[in-house]
Every structure is written in C-alpha cells, then in structure tokens.
Length: 169
Image 1 (tube, helix red, strand yellow):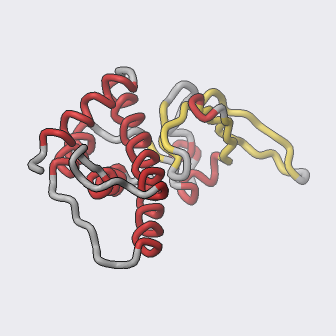
Image 2 (spheres, helix red, strand yellow; image 1 turned 60 degrees about the horizontal axis):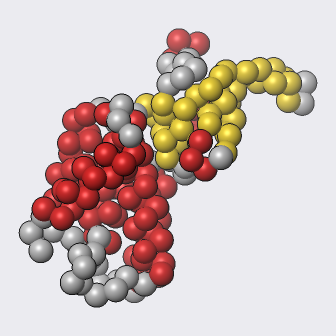
C-alpha cells in the first residue's frame, strides 16, 4: 500500500468505524510493538468515552471510512421513507441480520434497520431486544447525519424523526 493511500485521514477528521460508528481522529502516533514501529490512528468516540487505535496499514481491513457524502445521506433518508420490510424468519435470525447491518458501517443498511424496526405510537410494543437494535441503528444514523451536516445530534434526530413520522402508516 502506498503511503499517500494510507494517510488519507488526518487529525480532526471525522471517520466511521463499522463496529462503533462516528469517531474523530485525534492524532496519528507511532508505537513500538514487538520491535516494530507501528503507525496508529487514534480515534476518539466521545459519546462512548472510548478511544480506539487502528494501525494505519490496516485501514482497509478495519472498514474505516470517511463520512458519507450528502448524496448517501439523502439515499438513507429515502430508505427511511420506504415501507418496512420484515421477513417472516424467526426473531433470532432477524436480530442477527439487523446486528450485521448495524455493524457493517454501511449507512443505507443501517437506515434499513431503522426503517424496519421503527414503531409508531399505535403499533404494537417492541420487545426489549428489538428496541435495543432500533436505538443502536438510530444512534449510528443520527450521529453520521449530524457529522455530515455539521449540525448537532438533536437537530439530526429531529430530521430523522420527521422522515420516519412522515411516511405512510
């Protein structure tokens, strides 16, 4: 991998790490690991009070990516407007699929989970595990929408909520 490809991320950049969502690169540091110099991106996930160190040469395998483009955000919003697609498979199987979509880091897949698990007030209650998956997906989506628009999470949450409540029941 060429050096220029490796350092497409810089300190202060917002990035998306599939398993954790939106984080911010706070620095690039070198560490000695087993006698080798290793260059690492130090990524802060402030909301989760977590710091992750990802070797710069493992960016592709880790799935680390830049924030979605406004086009992708728009596509995700269109996805939210769609009709929920709920398979008739057992919940454990569906839950596994939802979890994979959330951790894929793919914004459209995350939006599909939000769409499929969203409940209006007059719909049946969600189970605890459904609610947890829904909230995890919603939080990932909202954080990325906020980071891309440069706004705060509250206005991003409102935006997502308006799209969800505007769709046909």
